[in-house]
Amino acid sequence: MQGFAGKVAVVTGAGSGIGQALAIELGRSGAKVAISDVDLEGLGHTEEQLKTINAPVKADRLDVTEREAFLAYADAVNEHFGKVNQIYNNAGIAFTGDIEVSAFKDIERVMDVDFWGVVNGTKAFLPHVIASGDGHIINISSVFGLFSVPGQAAYNSAKFAVRGFSEALRQEMILARRPVAVTTVHPGGIKTAIARNATAAEGLDRDQLAKLFDKRLAKTSPERAAQVILDAVRKKRARVLVGTDAKILDVMVRLAGPYYQQLFGPVIGRIMGPKA
Ligand SMILES: NC(=O)c1ccc[n+]([C@@H]2O[C@H](COP(=O)([O-])OP(=O)(O)OC[C@H]3O[C@@H](n4cnc5c(N)ncnc54)[C@H](O)[C@@H]3O)[C@@H](O)[C@H]2O)c1
Image (cartoon, rainbow, N blue to C red; front, side):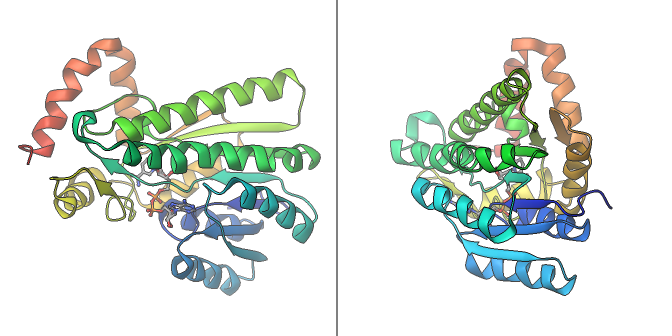
């Protein structure tokens, strides 16, 4: 896959899953890649694979919730490569728990990483991406940014917020005639470590939730997800749905309007089984 030769791309959460696959596919397509994660072991694997294919890479520890560090990182990447064309705000975490039993801190943590991490990355890199003259901001939401399900209020809130933020940004860039495209990504179930890395409200069995996700919900490989995302980036699409599940669910929600809530609630209830 070609099309990114000479471009500088930044990928957060690049130590695993979609971020790792994006970084490698970008490297294969000719981009110079700045990768970061809080998981240094995973990040090291991604760096090794990029070096194997001779892709120029800069690897750093970065927690996307640390705003000052993110701002300094943006300047450092710009200085290192001389410009920045693209940022993939990908780092994310999941949490399962009904609102009634979820602690404030668990909801806040998801918003901090999944929403504020995207805001930090966008704001930190926007001046550089504009200055590149050919910029692109790619924010990873989810199908859970298109509809809500019980047990996912924190994640739903963060992913709806990413969508709102990114769709406003795209329109602002067009109105201000900035040379920056914005793409919002809505993956369905992707076979990554997300559920194994996830936390859950007290009383829920995390292992069981992870097994359920891996067995019944994760359908698309991260490599395929990366190809679909990069294809949409090439075409400067406003929105990309990743996976057949995402496409079907999107149509169902559009057709059902608010009544989707009556359909999805019982289905999710059956999949999740009796509550602990
Ligand atoms: N896997 C799916 O089914 C799916 C579906 C829809 C959306 N997504 C989204 O895709 C993105 C990537 O998830 P994934 O499935 O590859 O999960 P993953 O757990 O395999 O990878 C996420 C990476 O983000 C890193 N990370 C977590 N918190 C961080 C922080 N504070 N700062 C920096 N890095 C941090 C993790 O260490 C990990 O390497 C996330 O935003 C996720 O919400 C995933």
